[in-house]
Length: 639
Image 1: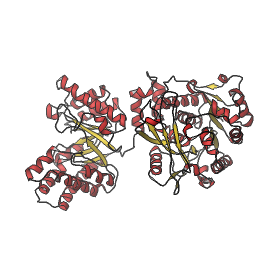
Image 2: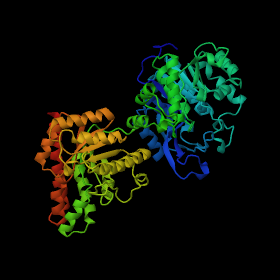
Image 3: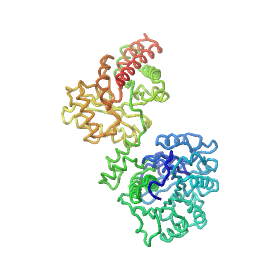
Image 4: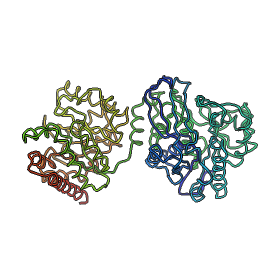
């Protein structure tokens, strides 16, 4: 293949075959029998490659089947989040989505169990291969496992015929799983090689129609029917003109575009990366994604091999499969800066790039009705002589008010608490709102967490869609010991949230404990960034001058260009004052919206808790105030 020889199509590549939900044991160094909790992700060789290539900037699609149930919907939703075309993912009304259970017992033992008996992806047939969809791609990737049964074999061969007839390339990932060919028992899922003349003869019929063939040494052995690697390569070359890529584990890979040389090392070798092996599962799929990013975009083979080796290094150094494949930004960062760690999962700089470029997408604004207030509403209830339990019902009215304004549009949210907001959170979910949840003990200075200081254990119970919000009354001129205590609390929170995959919004209020000048908040942010605290969002008080916002923007841009942005807090300011604050930040794109509370709900709360306002009147009052604030925000942005 030469650069520029691949036709321009809507998609770069379509992968075909296995699709499962992987359940990875979270206790590392444990037998699968002893694992007590699992992390969920999309799995299956072609599904991983579809995600991996999409992360690396290719336009990818997948042909497979999933069940008509929650796991099947999860797969499709995750594929959509990753940017994979869904045209070829069929929903099977009769079969369940495949599952795979895995664990990391040690650096050489990775037991896994395939739950694929009559599952959706194993029922793929010729009817699932749409010619127009195949013709929309520059290349089609087929996988060895899906040649193991007659109907899946027929489906892939049909796709290959259509691709070749329309000038597209055919890629074979040998992807040899002996137990899925019926050669090993259910408990031998990790077995990677069992010799079989029947399998070898079957795979040999595939090789002549391929333009790229990729496999480990064991996979090359099974494809050729020889356990001498050099001889196996020559057998494959006698059957196919394809570019052959030999994966050699820690030694990287070798590319053979033409005749096979007299020694394995005499092929084209990319740059290698010495990495600690943590989990080999999924490394080949990450490797293939990196190679395809180069090969399908016309890069030379050495460059493609280097990118493949780097992507494989990321996967082998991390726990999961598809979630660990790097993004294009992450790969470029690694190639430019390298890492002092052989265990890349311990490199905080790279981990942040990975997190920031793989987290769920959100609209470029956030207009939030904040009603996570506990102390203020308790005081209102007490003064009105109402039981505090009524606060729960009032917060549900607030959510109804938000719903009247948002009408299902993206970019709207709320701040809600665990104490009085549990049912309101269910309402917010139905409305599709962004939800932020406070973690701090109200009013605490130095900062304390609410309920428990073990935030990691608490956050595990929170939905992945909820953002952790934490308020710190922090001033950069505070005594050093107070600053240290507060910032260490936030660092603990930041690390715990990253560990369990939750976004963080840090709220800094400095004005209550010292003067504000043009550099106060910028200095506060600088001090937190210096500790490695990189929240997804900042929530900040309004600033008196444009220069203050320029300083804040510069600090964020310097330390975290992936920060989602800043939202303004209200501090019970009147609407007119908030309007001035909105106008002041209009020239500063880092400010994405607001999270205002008491300005919106105080009047209705006092009246409703005293029994002087009905549910409808309270809802209408809050909706009107929120709608006006939204209109003011949108108006200043347009101006």
